[in-house]
Structures are given as structure tokens and as C-alpha cells.
Image (cartoon, rainbow, N blue to C red; front, side, top):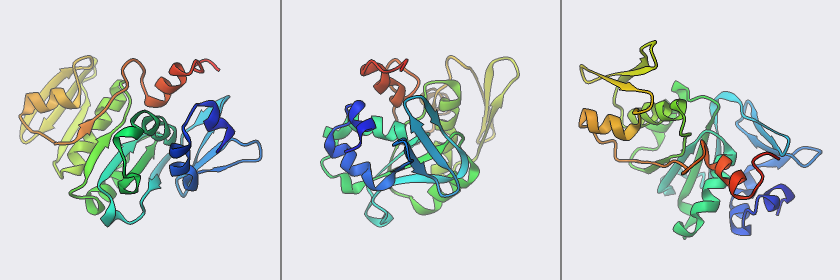
Length: 211
């Protein structure tokens, strides 16, 4: 049990699951290794690296993994599993991947090459960057080529299968693209109800958002 996770009311079972995948600094702040960089969390700060590597937690034997949960921070993974723990009686079948502060092509290639035929859940933010990440990653997982960019006037343009789709930032989402294109990626894209991230939702739920 870790005092920071206790303060966030993370239950013992969830702490036990993540315990092998973080360490602490001399002040007890949490460190999550991406190999070449670390995500660093203390109650006064939360630093998330830009990296081409992953932070991983869960079963390292990829052949035994059934569910892959992909997010932008390790703390989002912790917050989401706290919320969803009762839905997963077999935690040994889970693999969490955090891509850090920005999805890279190397992340997409690694997932596509090693994790085909898994069930995927995407946990990126409700903001426009998170929604763009959903589509880029979903397309990459399915090996579907597309281009996505801003039109310079607060619109989102997607080129896919020789067609062009235009969305306002407010209307754009993975689901909206699926409806417009008629293409189903068949993965779960989950968002917190009222906050940009699952970790932000956890802080708000526990009255810690401004602490």
C-alpha cells in the first residue's frame, strides 16, 4: 500500500495490481518508467513525458492478454481500474499501455505488430486532442490508412479510402467518424462523464481536484 494511492482511495486489489509497475523517489512521489523517460506524480505536480516508448502494466506474456487498455498517463490507468475493477474478475488477462503526452507512429506500429486480435479500450481525454488520438490509434490498430488534420478554421478534416470528411471540433469523435464513413473499428472508446480524463474525474470525486 502506498500513502499517495491511499489518499486517492485506490483499493488494495488495484494497488496490488499496479505495485510492480511503479517506484518512488526520496519524497515518496510516484514514478512510472517508460524506459527512456518517467511519468512523475506528486500531489503538487504531474509530469508526463513525450516518448516513443510505453509505460506497461499487467501481463507481460502478450499471448495470454485478452484486454488491452491504452491511455495517455499511468495515473489514468490507475483511476480507470479503480472505477472498473468489479468488471474484471481476471486481472491477469489485462495489459495497460500508456503512450505518454503524445501518440507516436512507433506506438501505433508496435501495437499493430504485436497485439492483433485483442480487445481494445481507449481512455484518452474528452478534448479535441484526445478525440483525434482515438481515431489515429483505432485506424492504426486496424491497419487502415488515413490522414487527419485541422482545416485552419477550427474544423477537422479526415481523408480515408479516397474520401474526405469534414467535422467541426465540437462534433468530431471516433463514433461520429464511424457513422460518417460507414467503417466500424470495433473497439471501445471510453470517456469520463464530466472531466477531461479519468484521473481528473477521480480527483474531483475525492475532493482533491484543486489540491
